[in-house]
Length: 143
Image (tube, rainbow, N blue to C red; front, side, top):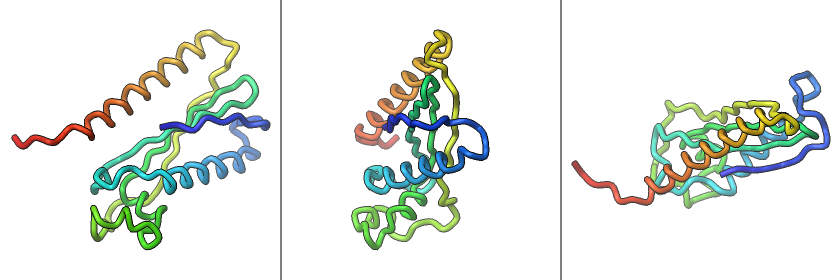
C-alpha cells in the first residue's frame, strides 16, 4: 500500500531534486514489479494507486503513483513473469504504459494544521485502499 522513507537531502522543487524523483520512480517501478496486483485484477482499463511517503528533515511529501494493467505487464515483462500472462492473454495495445506520479507537500511537522491535513489524507487513502481490497474479495453477482 505504501513505502515510507527518510532522505538526508532536501526534497525541494529545484533542478537538484531530479535525482530524488528518478530514485522514487525507480523505487515505485521495482515495488510494482516485485509485488504486482493480483492477476485477477489485471483487467484492461483498471487503474491502481500506490503511495510513497518521504520525509526530509521537518518536511513530509506524499507521492501518489497511478498506473494501469498495461504498465504492470510492461514493467514485469510477461516472459520473465508468467504468473501475469494468463489472465489477459494478449495485452491491449491502446492503453498507456506509463507510471504517473503526483507529489504533494511539503507538510511541515512543526505545524499542527499541516499534520492535521496529512493525517486526514493518509486516513482517506487507507480507507479507500481497504474498500478496494474488500470489494475485490467479494464474489461478483450477476444482475
